[in-house]
Each structure stands twice: as structure tokens, then as C-alpha cells.
Image 1 (spheres, rainbow, N blue to C red):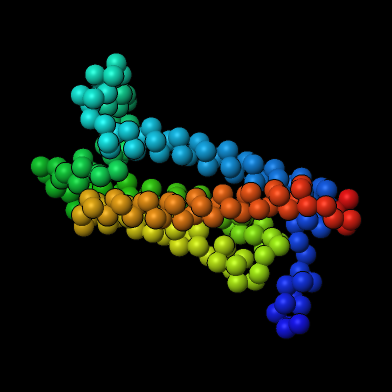
Image 2 (cartoon, one colour; image 1 turned 180 degrees about the vertical axis):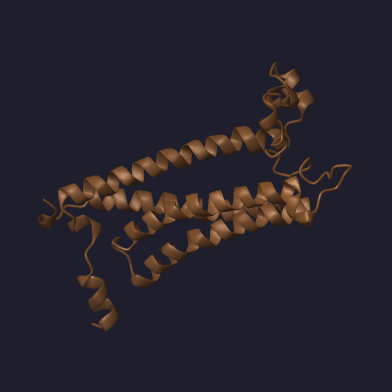
Length: 204
């Protein structure tokens, strides 16, 4: 047996965790999964629907038009149009053009970027830690740890590119979000199966 295989065999696995540790890991996974489901719902309502359904289509279906839904407070008015994945309104410059560093697009993108980098990366720091204890080959676990972070950076880059280069970069959201979404789903299912469906004498 090679040294790498021996190291992998001796490394603790989720199925050998004591019951309190399994409960903690399960609680973390389920909480994050609920948050991810909420984020997906927000993306559908705030991004996908405004992008692919015009105001006239929404009114025809008996719903309010997007401008009517967005007319709230003065502070929220500054964020109008940010839900459009093609960023049509964000790319429109005002008549009195501010400097690049003070433009609404740049300021909003900085805010959006740092919030998502902190938030999403923290999710995959937790999920990456759980991945370390899956019953998989070292190389497989390494890729499962790294790939979500690559997906996050692709997703963030898509936002900047579609606003400052071309709206066609919108499509990068699909491989970016899909990458960390698929890995999250796989790790969640694999971890739950190993902890609760695989019997182990040391897990009691």
C-alpha cells in the first residue's frame, strides 16, 4: 500500500464520528442548504423573472409591472434595475457623469462583490471542512474543496464583465453558479449518507 493510500485510510471519516459530531455537521449542512434554497428563490424572483419576462408580460399575467414593484423608498430607488441579469439599466450613464470611482455602477459592484465573497466563501469553508472527512480519494476531496471557490470567482467576474465589457458575459453565471451548486449538492448527499446510512461500530 502506498503512503498516500495509508494516509487516506488512517484519516478519520464522517461515518466514524461520534453522535454529537454527526449532529453538529448535519445541523450545519441543513442550515446552509436552507440558506442556499432561499438564495435560489431570490435569484429566480429578483434576477431571472425580470430578465426574461418584460413588464408587459407580467401585466398580462395579472401581476404588477416591475417599475411598480420597485417604486418604494428613495434609498431603494438607487438600486432599481440591479435585478436584471443583463444589467441594462446599470450600464446606462447619467447625464452628469460622475467619476468612475464614484459612479453608481462601481460603488454598487464593490458592495455586491465583497458581500458575496465573504458570504459564499464562508459557506464553502464550512463545506470544505466537511469534505475533508468524506470517504473519498484524496484527489477527489481536493477537487471538491477547490472547485466551489473557482465557481464563486467565475460568478463574481461575470458580474463585472457583463457590466463593463458586454452583457453576453451574463452566461458565465451558469457555469459559475452551477459549479458550486453541484458540488454543494454532492457533498451534502454524500455526507448525509455516510453519517446516517453507513453503519460503523465506532460511531455510537
